[in-house]
Image (cartoon, rainbow, N blue to C red):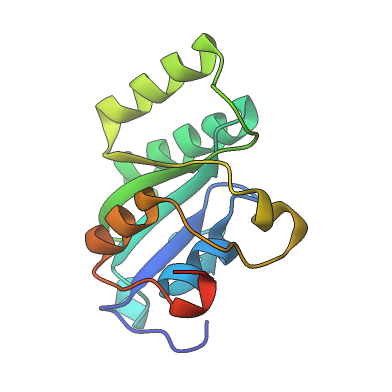
Length: 148
């Protein structure tokens, strides 16, 4: 982990392809991969868990939260939020919205809408206001190179 700091925000992937790389590019922080960081080793203590809004993504988020709540994660972590990145444009099916409601009972949840430019690997011309709110939550500013 380059540039790691206990006070920096660590972005944790609940599964591969969750959207962490794009969020780190826009909001900063450290991509810690698919594991919980260990503050005792100087890694970020403030974390955001990221997953997609697909059934698989929500299941992975649920499993990661279970590990955190069951004590199978390093001590001293401060979960700021679960961030759910849209897996497709449009509205979510009711079954997935129900799963999100369950996740909200276990942790604060923030949603990021579908951003077409991220799919093609280009820089969006504008970013949704949800990223401004997320920047406030994690205590960073959006990087201007990302279209803000």
